[in-house]
Amino acid sequence: MRDMMILNRENLINLILTGVLLAVPIAANAFGQPFFITLATRIAILALAATGLNLALGVGGLISFGHAAFFGIGGYAAGILASHNFSGDPLLFGLSGTNQMWIIWIVAVAVAGLVGLAIGAISLRTSGVYFIMITLAFAQMVYYFAISWPAYGGEDGLSIVVRNQFPGIMTMRPLNYFLICYVILLVVIGLFALIRASRFGAALQSARQNEVRVATVGINPYRIRLTGFAISAMITGLAGALFADLNRFVSPSMLSWHMSGELIVLIILGGTGRLFGPLAGAALYVIFEYALGGLTERWQFFLGLILLGVVLFARGGLLGLLAGKARHG
Image (cartoon, rainbow, N blue to C red):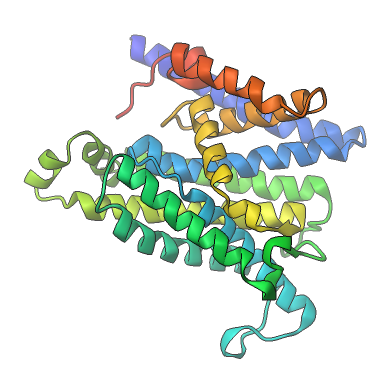
């Protein structure tokens, strides 16, 4: 009975979160306030990126400090394809660029997934602090590669002259672009829920708790973790492509370790492993950035105090504080 009450309360909170996220930009559009639509879009995209990491961290127990690499790879996929489409210069093997979002998303997801497989194949042979450091090292390698890549802006970044297109939708309108990101976020959260409730999700959670027992029943924990890590990278790469289109700019800062840390902060703030934890954390983070950023340049100090309070007194994050202790996995 208690578990059912907690589940119902959390479902209600999740419903309120998704409703408010949708209502705010619609109201902002009605009152001619595009800035708040952009804020809501940023929340949706950061929540999407953190949902990817949440699969690895919250379900698989993999504390990755390198997910900025996948976020940036998705962004550069959008920027590079758009720049070649604008200039008319061919890509590798004579392939042309494109300004079609759905193609860019496929490329971003595929490249991020392949890089995730490569990084995971090596990183997952370690554990604990070694895993954290090796994922960070790989992310920094990608970061410095982007800085030293003058063909695509180097450390100055790469501009997307005109936001990429989606069939039948005017993407330059802020509300339209928000709705695209909003729908993708909900689809991915649904995918996350299906994965977590599946046999694969159960195996991934079991590998986090006791990999020896998983191996004794004939399941290879390394392959399970590697698959989960790659899926996680693909989701974060998709978010990176959306983020680049939102700003119409991609830079090495998307690949920085600060970005990896930010994604971890979002998950901790919202609730590690919670279905809508990344959304709650992203909303809290962006709201504090907007509210406190206008008062002081050192707003991160106050965010740090809040994060410290969450770690000490609300281990389940915002959702854990409001809905109670999670009962999954």
